[in-house]
Amino acid sequence: MPRPRLELGTWGKITRTEVAPKRYRARARFRDFTGKTRQVEAWGTSGAAAQRALERDLRDRAQSAGEHITREMRISTLGRSWLAEMEQSELKPQSLAEYRATFTQRIEPALGEYAIREATISVLDRFLKSVAAERPALGKQCKVVLNGMFGLAARHDAITHNPVRETKLPSRQRQAVMALSLDEVQALRRGVYAWQNEPGTHGPKRAPDLLDLVDVLLGTGLRIGEVCALRWDDVDLGAEQPAIVVSGTVVRVKGKGLTRQAHPKTSSGFRRLILPTFVVETLLRRQVEAQPNPWNVVFPSAAGTLRDPHNVRRQWRDARTAAGFEWVSPHTFRKTVATLVDRTRDTESAAALLGHSGTAVTHAHYVQKLHEAPDLSNVLSQLGANRPGLIEKGG
Figure 1 (tube, rainbow, N blue to C red):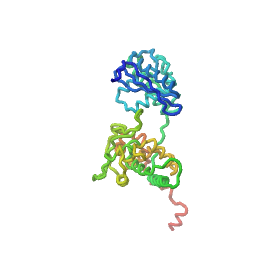
Figure 2: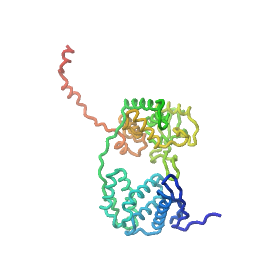
Figure 3: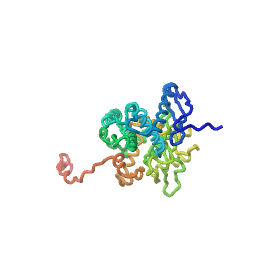
Figure 4: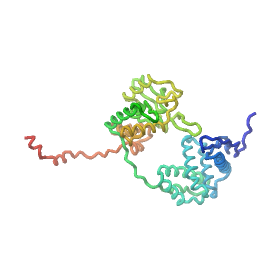
């Protein structure tokens, strides 16, 4: 017999699970006011703590779903309403998870008990500046979430304007783009090869194909998640111009774990790339040596599953330290590609290769700046005339 359908704004039985020592999860089915039933969960250091957190969340969901947004509504309830609205949008699951974590971990503890009318520009500005002083990127993320929340309040006429728009985060000095020179690329390759093949090492097992992955990054400008998602179905090595199609990325989704998202990070990221010879050679060798895996990916994990970008970054940190290139991250390869293409072709070509929708982001964040001085060699040559020692040698 099927279980009875939940009433709108109600939830079913709460279950507790011990996931790890002092880490408990509480779950329940909740039916929102759109009629959709979804699993809701909360965490705590004990089963009771997790259940209390879940019950508080469920009450807020029920209240926010059925309550008109007014000036007196608590910010905690406003946040739940906004997140519920985002759940119905086309927002990517990983983005929704990030917004929810930002709200529950930073915004709600600091501002949750304020009424909407009490959240003045100065209150919000002080909060954002305090977060940004600790972690600038998190300050920016908090502002994005608060802007969405108070935008919702403004649309419901609870406030006349969105106060978040008047706040200002501390300005950050943009760091110069760092890219590898061609000589540094070769030195880095030698260092990674030595690290990868060093005998008798202890600790975590070293990835035997990290250098292959680096070569593909260098020869394509792919993001780390894109190269982990590259499938043999996307590779055409038999064409007159061997190429790959960038059709997805590996992401971690709450409740699902690691998965292959069937589209790149952005719509402009879906692209076809013609491969340089050294990448073709790498992929041909891997194709011959490849073992079948369920995802048919070019770079599976040692267990034949999807490769976690976080694990690749961890392996890379060990390799780069051994190679003497501590400043180089996987994203540095992308910047190196962009810089080389920009200097030998143009920024438009670099943007297209990286999957950017325009050149602004490419130019600002990926291309190492080279300030070209005018050719004044004829003028400066006067300073080298009649140098001691050269006169005698010239006889």
